[in-house]
Image 1 (cartoon, rainbow, N blue to C red):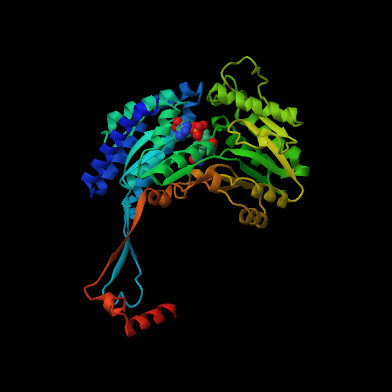
Image 2: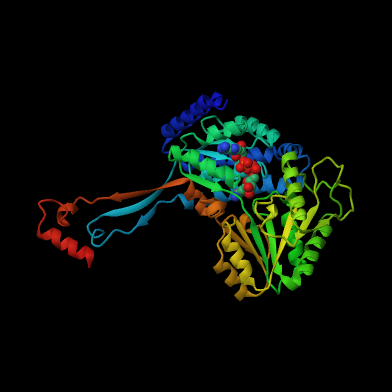
Length: 476
Ligand code: NAD
């Protein structure tokens, strides 16, 4: 079945690569023009894209979608427009003494790679397709996007709009299910960016390996929250609640579980529950609160809670409006705070990606550090507290893709910081200059002077005294 589309996809890739080769060197103005068109596309059709996302989810706040998917994507475009000239500048590099005196020169040129594949997930369907695209374009590439089949309406609309704003040799959107995605990931792109789960990321990397296609993998994982003993639990609770409830917890960087001092557990839980109540007096009829994207995902989340309960956890449902969720049929789920969790519970084994918050406790913060270090390296890491010594201790003893202190998730919204995971939470990064470089090839260029350097340096046979002198100097 998948191979039905292989020929079509390969044809598009060939078309884009031929256009890329033909058009080089392309002026920066062309790159800018593409970024501006991508920005205009999401801006002009923001409302329709948000409606499509809401229909795909069951319910998703228009305001939230405007913020996270439309405005954030435009922001990524603006950032690229502002900095791309600087990013794209060739860099002079040093040459070894005395080559410089003889006229040798070295530089690094950041050149486009060619055609970049972008495979994106459903949780921020517009942003995770178009935000990397801004830097893909800034670096002078063409692109093929394969968005998620779970947000089908949004994917179809993106395809229609891209056909209106771009020629197929610049950008295309390929729709289809997992078979098409698998075929897509096996194409001989010049680079492939994948955002999605760690399990699929593994398959994508395997497929890319067959053609030695370099990959950027933006994956998931269990991002922990550490609460220091002197944290402001009310403030922290509200911030954690925001991060866990936005998009109903379906965020790669959502705080997955929290680690709190044993004697502060009640206070920490009360802080989060109060935070939810402050922002969401009700959930079912509240448009601000998103649905879970699919029945399968909804059942998985219910299963995580049931499994924890069966194995002895205490589950606190935060249901501010005291609503009846049992027959609601719109896949909305209140926050479930789970205490007394153990490692044999699924909720502590897999990324949650929904409104479920396990709580673990520590006597000494080093127990929490050891726990994190014994598990997969997370995408995000969060520390709440005013003790700078403790903050540095936890930061320097752990490893994660990124960090926000005294809040959650926010580091991703800093355009000038790289965004990416480490190990099982991903490899490579985009945003900021790191993103531009990820989608560029750092080409080393050396300019040899007129003088015969090889002879002068003793590199040229017949070998003799000059060679020995060169060896001795090199090893000094
Ligand atoms: P997913 O891995 O199921 O799917 C992502 C994409 O992969 C989809 O477009 C899908 O069509 C495609 N796909 C499916 N099977 C494939 C195959 N065999 N080969 C190639 N591609 C295939 O992920 P999801 O459920 O859409 O998204 C949720 C996951 O994404 C979570 O784990 C979350 O943490 C992660 N995520 C990470 C980031 C980040 O930036 N690091 C951002 C958002 C989501």
